Image 1: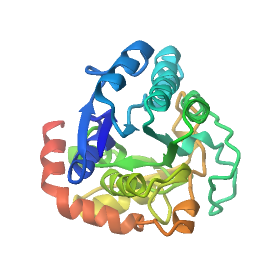
Image 2: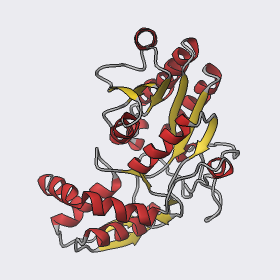
Image 3: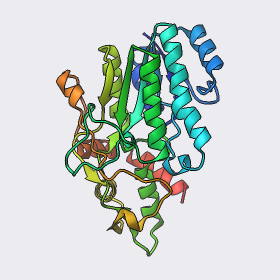
Image 4: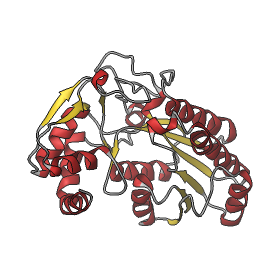
Length: 294
């Protein structure tokens, strides 16, 4: 199977490149090689490559920056998937698009999760663009999969766990203040890539929630991760109101992998087990990188 992987240089794209590459022919491109916001460029690239599947991991994911850089966010998160989905439809490819928990408003009472059938109501511009991107995909390409995930982490790129590690290694006298009233399911990029490959192989269709099992707060995640890393730390829980930001975040980002389970295809693990395995595999790499950035 020939797969065009867009956003192949990022956190999730890097893992997808490795996982998909074990069984398929993968053409991995970053923004420098393929501007997904340019309809003509996308059309010509897909016409030339003729992939069986197009996987889109490209996204403008800086949530606060989206509030200011709205044109750039719209181009990548809406026009990009629209162009890719349209080209996929024209050249009879399946289109796989990665979306987010931020399409929901987070007003459900914890621990009630969000299901694929729940109606989105984004409360940030990032969430709005991701929802509009989903809708564009549904309009443009019948053979599509939309995979909503949350709280992604991995070896590549920047993420919350790496930030916590870097701050802990600095050893400042001040404690690290971490939000303790936002809830979600930390998801390992490598595990997500495995699940994506399984769905592609099984010819999945429609919208799926794909996150780790279980849930926690950002504070609980930081404490668990740093404990597993065996890094001394002093973190304190705070309320979201004590950490002002440009974008509003949903307080409940818990997604239920209902459709995966109904199809008998769910291979997602408990978030604690995945963080533990991630640390076991990547501890030395993470420590070297964090030490270099201090």
